[in-house]
Length: 352
Image (cartoon, rainbow, N blue to C red):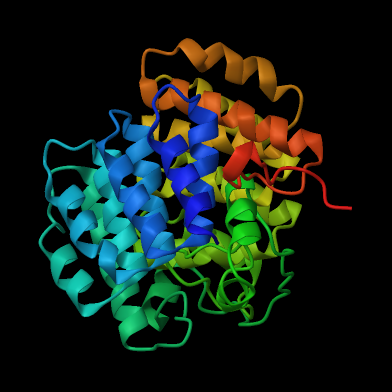
């Protein structure tokens, strides 16, 4: 992509007078470009006062998997004054990049005072270890674990129904801008670098559900079950995912909300609305629920999202603003959720 286009996207990203949804479109366009210049622009965006904005950039740096981002992500993770949601995303991003250096950096924060940070670091360490050792997709649990959760006699076969490539508006944008080689290399059918590998296609959905909902199970294996259920994406699997909102882990609940946004299944609508409305829920979870509602893009979501535009927690109000823009895109039939830069050219127009 031409340097002038990246420069234009950078200008929009960093200009705080530009409406937040348009800055997010520029942000995800830069992720799709994935050049060193684009990475530099995203790193500059980390000076923004919005924790939501900073957390999204940290997420994207991980998705790009460029090792030049490691020092920046480490700086975010080690900053005790940074918002826990941003630090969590920095840890997850280091797990996505998955180098020996990332492993050593993450080890220092496995007992961090912030629950979402320490859980993310432990999860990310497992992913890095898995990637570096080149392991196959792990079994969901050992024989002893199977006995504990009552699955010792469950057969190891089941129907695997792969969801079509795509996902949320932001992922479609990244796919539209990224090169063909990058799209083909993505391990996830949703073009995302996931925090854990999906469990084997041979494992029945009911077994996946049992492990996912087991509060005593290993978090890495719960995540593996989560992504395997997502990849099947039928109503049965969506129902299992929704049950996670009863869990005590904000980390797991926020990932489920994100995944439901990827699936865009209307069966998740009511549960996501309840999460967004719950004033006792972690803002990180409510943020993902809001954006998932935007991705599902049912008209009845509009009033609810508008109601939270003035919420006192900026993470929630800003998420709803971005979600309404995503909803508008999804409802428009546009080709992809993009801002391609120069002269206001937009990539959200249909291609004939």
